[in-house]
Image (cartoon, rainbow, N blue to C red; front, side, top):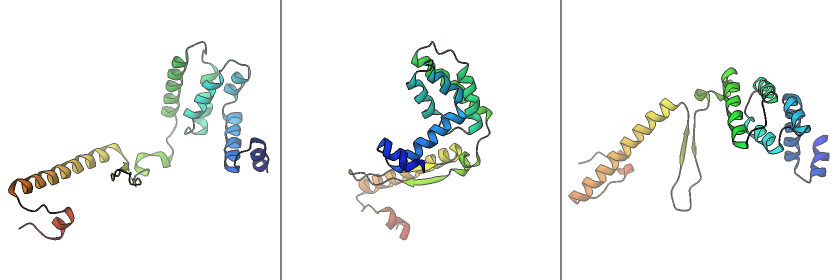
Length: 173
């Protein structure tokens, strides 16, 4: 029932209101010490917002630990130093927490074909474990060089260039 009221008050969509409610709950329950420092004026609002942005993927326990660590951090530093400190605390929090099943590289494998660009080019994104991605990249590079070299030979010999589809359907003479 809060979503419609909040969306009216903030003049935003229900989805945006739902997101704001979730974020407020996250702050109140998982980052109470940082929120207290923000309320007292010890933690600058932009730094708090940056912390929220950078901790969006953390599990609840890791976020609670980060809250404790940030509450003990000396904030009489420059924004750059704070960003570095936050990065170190995030890395430590991630290292201490167990990676959720859905976030493991072997469970995130996928291939995404982005929409064609106006210039006629496309982009294929492949997501998965880095050793397999590197191997696939090497094989694609070798195949691209083989096609290019075949096209160069055909051009130099004056023979008609065959498309990849033609080359697959019938062997070369």
